[in-house]
Length: 205
Image (cartoon, rainbow, N blue to C red):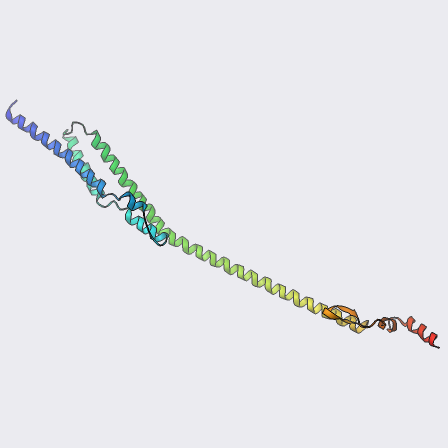
């Protein structure tokens, strides 16, 4: 084998090692660009909307996609040039990082949907509560008016009955508004009992 071929093989080996290093470096940068677990989990805010906004900000893949693309590019070049003796570990690492990037982006989209939905839902619930309170107030007002009408009607009826007995039969309204006999001897001398009056007149004669 000529020296030239040896040099070419050596150069090719160096190029293969460099490609592998480039793939590994790009994957490491992609991992580093992903959000930290604590940043996603420990979120502080004054209300639900604040929490969602903070979470959406934390769920940012940053430059991870660009670094992942570089890793795929170098890996594809090395594979086509048959430069890697064993590249299974690189393929698995690329797939793992790609899945993680997709998961983070999907979670960010879901949080974004909630960020738009929660304020609208809150407004709808507030309107529903206000309508319920108004309906309850109207029902109480109607019930109060009905009770007042019943009380007035009952009073008028009692007054009418008392007046009738007072005029026709000598009965009147006693203490506490109750109907009572005005005098023990009224019935005995009233026109409603003429026989009693006649008896007393004969006896006197």
